[in-house]
Length: 266
Image (cartoon, helix red, strand yellow):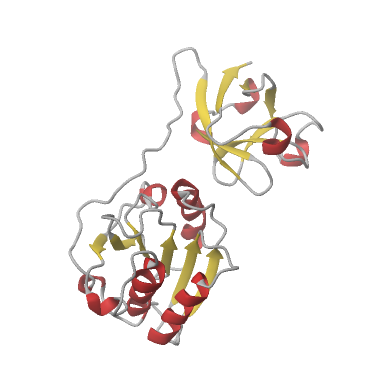
């Protein structure tokens, strides 16, 4: 799938499988058997189990930095074995092999898909498909066949729309406040919200009210946050984060995913 024929195609893997069990290894074995020359990159196998939104955030922030023609296999699939469809999608020069469960919602907002197909052609699956491991039996072989040159049009029926996540939206009432919600906690304990930089053009004029009654002031960087006091900043995702200097805001302040926060003018 690469523009340069001498460069082997690249397949990435994003799952909630972890690495202690044989699941990721089995997927790699399938891929190597069908397309032995492809490259495989493990992007993450540490998505929290069944957390589709967390996977969607990961995809939104990581995929845009990959070269054109990369094939991304995403298996965060609590609906495996149910009526949800396995799909193959082309968008903004990238390819996605994944369940149709909304995991592409955030990536597709600025990059509408160019083509989407249900994966229902037995020729791009393993001969036996389990009801519990579509990552091995459908997604991995489909990605390998795509890397080997099988066109998306051969995968199955064309789809005109995909499932989307019902995401919590930040709101801005007339009083100048911004009401938001923590949607993710990263490895450092920073609490990432659904308030975006575009909603707050002058962060130095705002203070953020936290669920525990504390207030967070704006800081340009993590090290600029006053020690022992919560602060807020806009991270690399462009979303407002609640953070502590060299501490976990999640652990120290007890802020969980879903927590309501309010930014108000000082």
